[in-house]
Length: 162
Image 1: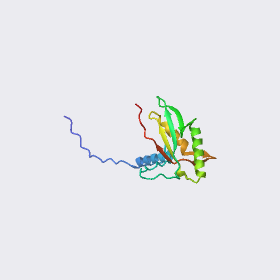
Image 2: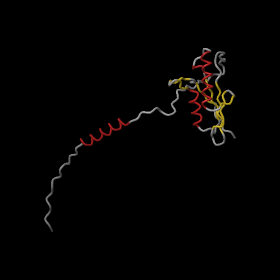
Image 3: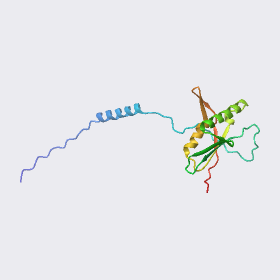
Image 4: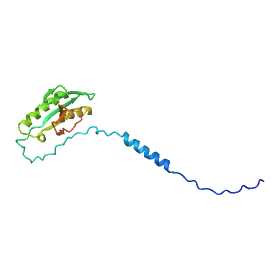
């Protein structure tokens, strides 16, 4: 039997933390410099109207709401647009009609807070068409500046057709 090996004293291993901290700071600086701040998608400045009680008398000076109807076919694509019962060609035409309505309302002494729009759409309609309608009526660009049009937008409750 061979002679026993002498026992070595276990030495404590020291871990140098400086390189790890350097890497962490370099990663942090990298992510801070490459971070892109973008506007949140679908962030509309739209104020939903408060529900009115039935006991409240109607205001004679209040403008009637603009009624926009979005019809869908069976696949969910946009089949037609109408504003206050009149057919509208596309969202550009809708924007122009709402803009003229808002301009007339502002000339008569009303404010943007008085203009209200009600969207009635089919249950099957693709969501992107509703977003396009809100975009078309909420504002327009003139000479590079955003002109606000409608801020009060309400929705007719959706009902699934049997």
